[in-house]
Each structure stands twice: as C-alpha cells, then as structure tokens.
Length: 96
Image (cartoon, rainbow, N blue to C red):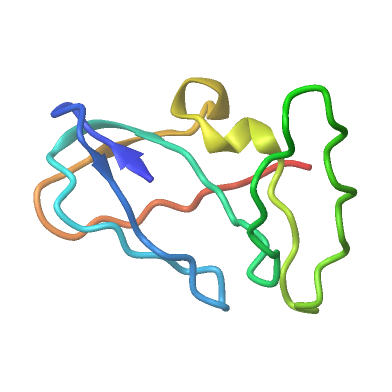
C-alpha cells in the first residue's frame, strides 16, 4: 500500500517474483506499507470474549513467507519514497 500526499491509500499486489504495481499515486512524498497474508489461512471468527484464540497453523503454500508485522502500518514501516510524475521504480527492502 502506498499513501501519497493526497492521504488516500493506493493498493497493489505482490507477484510471485516480488515485483508489484501500485497505480495512481500522486507525485510527491509516499509512505509505504507491506503485508502478505497467508494465502492458505482459513478465515475464522474470533472467539467469544474470555475464550482462547485458536492456535496458528503452518501455511500449506510452500512459496509464501510471512512479512514482519511492523511493515503493515505506514507509520511503523519506515518505508518512504518520492514519486515523480509518470512511471516510477521503488525497491522495498524488508529486514527480518
């Protein structure tokens, strides 16, 4: 996700090769966030208050790997770039 000077979140998908495309980000400062939910995770409702959370399951998608939670929110991710008019390239380097 990219948030430009317009304050609007702009979303894209991460391809298997790690490349991504986020369209319509206005020129200027951009803050980034990166998430990668487990594609094989079952969506289950939260338990009732006071009940324990279900245990985490291991992913069944051998190509998927988790991205640290700190990258999920632009204010914590510390990922910035400066978008110019037209196509841009920004390499996002994530640390474990």
